[in-house]
Length: 441
Image (tube, rainbow, N blue to C red; front, top):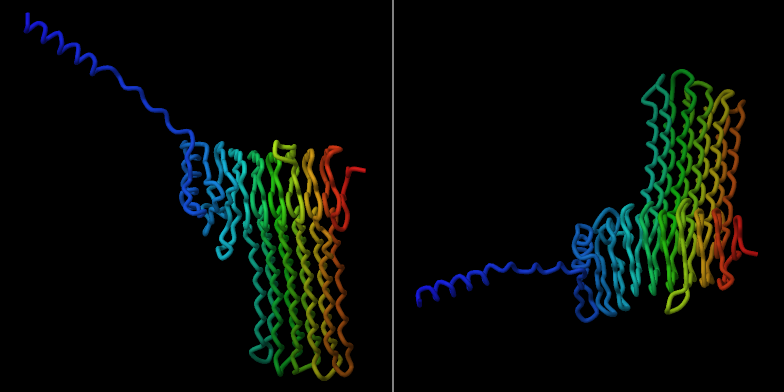
């Protein structure tokens, strides 16, 4: 009996040990570390990467903590591109770019991403600038009689500045910000256009050799749109402030290259000069650029209204000047080369506060103190004509370009569908409150 009892107890204990354990649920949130107000920026980058790959979807930031990003994590973004649905919960927390770091925006929401953020400040982002264009090569001088000087090469265009100084929302992506601040962000500046190369000089003896032509200056790049937020998807703002953001400044056009001096061995004309490049256009939407097909919605939150204040549209680029025509030979009936034409100045940016080309629905939102009063880019001057020979004529002076258009829509520039609530305030903006089509009366 004792042996049977022992067997029964053993079986009972074995059965108890075989009871399956209950798996622990994966955590739904992760808190990013903070020590004495200094946040763990690497930990924040890691948390976003993990959330994109199926980890905790809610990221909690330390109270009154600043997370300073010192380099881009992906592409031109301080944080990894948001490619899933992620929540970001702050508590007076700040995510900023180190002012000495290379230029990158703070965050980009990809086409399949959704970011829902609260009580956080996004600051100091600077989307990358466009590259400066290369100058055209200088034409080689003649190497002897019968060998003309070589023409100058054309400059290459400046690159456009990147959009979204603080936040970029790609088509299909979504951003929801509540009780938050987007401040002191800048879209990328346009690069300067390259100058045209000067033509080489003609030979000092031998048969008639007209001067070669100078290269043309290239256009400056456009400034990036959306100093604070550039939206190509869906943005919803609640009790959020956008302030002191700036759209990108445009690049200037390159100058035209000078025409080549004619060969001196026989009467010949001087070479024509290259034309100046056009200035780039300033970026639109100092605070927010809402592109065609995108949706921007603001509504009051539990802690107050939205404010779009003291933001600035991008500055225009000046045009390049025309080059100087080449001189004719010093004897005979040769004519001087014509001066190059000046380029046209770029347009100043529009929408100091908001530039809307999609659907914008505003509710209990103040748009005040914003500026789109930049002057259009200066026109390029025509270059002087080259000197003609004793029996020839001087070259014609190039035609000057046209100055660019001044900025407009200090508060709002509307080129889409704008729905304004009676509780909205649009005032104190420069040079006007609203411009474009469908502005409120």
